[in-house]
Length: 79
Picture 1 (cartoon, rainbow, N blue to C red):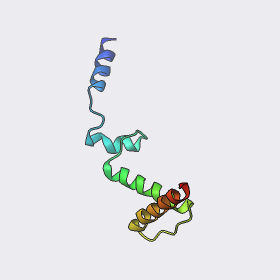
Picture 2: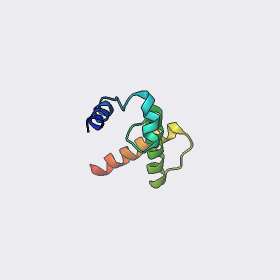
Picture 3: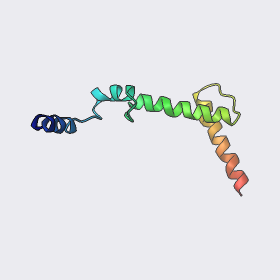
């Protein structure tokens, strides 16, 4: 029992958010992502939402511009 407790305490002292673990944690489905992966996920989400709303996309800048137009349309309708 003493050995198991020692292994458990050793595991709990590991910094699982350290860069060495980030890629592995993402691979096994944990919530850790590198900033580049997070950026890709956020951009993909914005593209998906824009496509659902019927926007045609040509590049990254257009995603932002179209999202701004959509927000402005919403603001116009709320008045």
